[in-house]
Figure 1 (cartoon, one colour):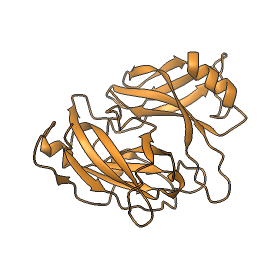
Figure 2: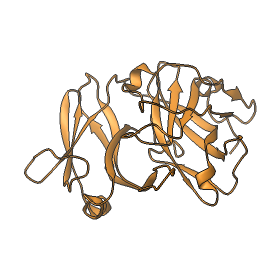
Figure 3: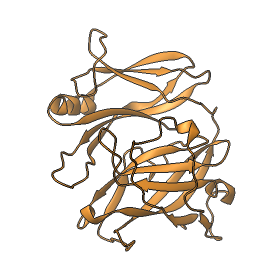
Length: 249
């Protein structure tokens, strides 16, 4: 499939982690260059996307964070392709780059202002990856209301008691504090336990349920079953883990 556009990010180190609100992202990084032929989506949609990659983000935050800036007024669902780069911006062809939230598969929906995804590097030379080049294969406008808040995620036990992310939970409460409905997906993430200067990254990403539609100003309880339940039971209290929700379609 022809590329819609391609750019390299400007790597940065976040002192305080990811943006607290995805609706108020700021700062320009780099302008996308349109390929000009074989377009598979409107050029205007791709030109609204910009990227920034942070290999490390500080204690308590997810590393290898890709910020996707959306300068438009509509929800966008990009399908991205990544090339790992070393500290000198040389490509690392043996390194495979995948994502936690699915921006490489058109799963992640990016609201106006922007959103984030988390990258995973595997293969020979993965530890040398310090940046990425981002290619936009498609950028589709999503016909859904724009929401101004993130869903509130709370792990729960069988009795309805709220737990922390490292506990053995059996359900997840999702609360939508917006006046519009939102569609999200849940993932359970098991993290590596790096040594020395190694970066922590996702070792296992397990979906919890399917696409979940949250009514406005309401909560929904999502049971943790199947592979997700197995992952929680295996990781809880033993290795670092997270339960995350992201806008999707």
